[in-house]
Image (cartoon, rainbow, N blue to C red; front, side, top):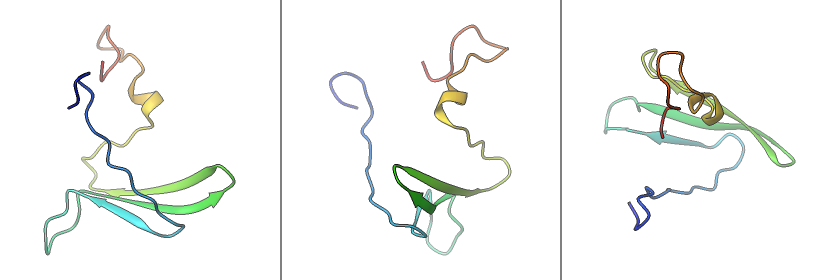
Length: 75
C-alpha cells in the first residue's frame, strides 16, 4: 500500500486474443484467466475463465450496497 492506504496496481498491455492469468501455480490451472477477445475503438471485450466458486463482477455492480449490508462493498 502507498502512503494514502491505496494498494498498488499492476498494469499490463495486451492485444486481442492475448491473456493474463491470476493465481497460477506451475502445472496447475490458474485461479482466473482474463482474455482480450476484441478491441473496437475505446472499448475492449474481455473473457473471464474461473472455477464456479469464483465470483466475477463489474466494479460498479460490486460497489452497490448489498441488500444485506448498509455500506457499499469494498469501502
